[in-house]
Length: 148
Image (cartoon, rainbow, N blue to C red):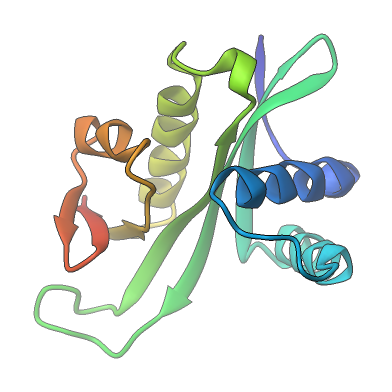
């Protein structure tokens, strides 16, 4: 298995994985969001506002991770106001429970640290909560946060 950073060439696969993630989480496909996903991934990968690490085996992307960035007004606990947000964590069903998601999560946490982000947040499903707890995230009013 190979782990690598996503590129523009991966946009179609990121769309397919995101769509499957939303379906697995119970969101009904009541509209076609492929054009919006395409624009989001393309522009985010180009300008660095979105980073994704991928797990690939035999040329098939089996898991994705994502990290996007935003700015909030400074607070005492986060004087810069900068926040990294974990998103797009998805592993194909047949590859789950093998530590792949945890490995990708650690890679994007390291990326956030290298970019000097000290607050990392996410929303999670109940099924994945233990992965984030193991990585040190703490539940706070529906958001899970990791201060590094």
